[in-house]
Image (cartoon, rainbow, N blue to C red; front, side, top):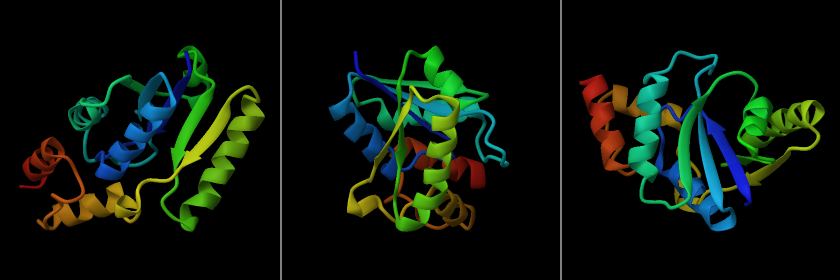
Length: 158
């Protein structure tokens, strides 16, 4: 079985994330969406809430499991029997950071590969941080997130 892990904070999950999950499901038999507990940043939603929001947004996609993880990603991947980590690249600005992560992961776990996918052009400008900021300021983010995520953002930010 070909499996991939797609890690992230998903705070919140956007249509761009869902697009990448869908693309991964076409390439792999099993897609493990790994919601990071240790994000190193203050999150809007708890890890449990983020898992539920990813499930709500991507529940229609076959072969997807959504779980939380903490600690090193490569150790989590090994615990899941996964040898491929998928990362999304929206723009050239993402590349440098993602390239560094991939290199560090390769040093720690040479048996695990990193695969980069790009979302559809329609979603290439969407980021969780921009969605959060627009929602916090009571702007319309309905074009960027699934309806359950929109509802959660409205509830969180009033």
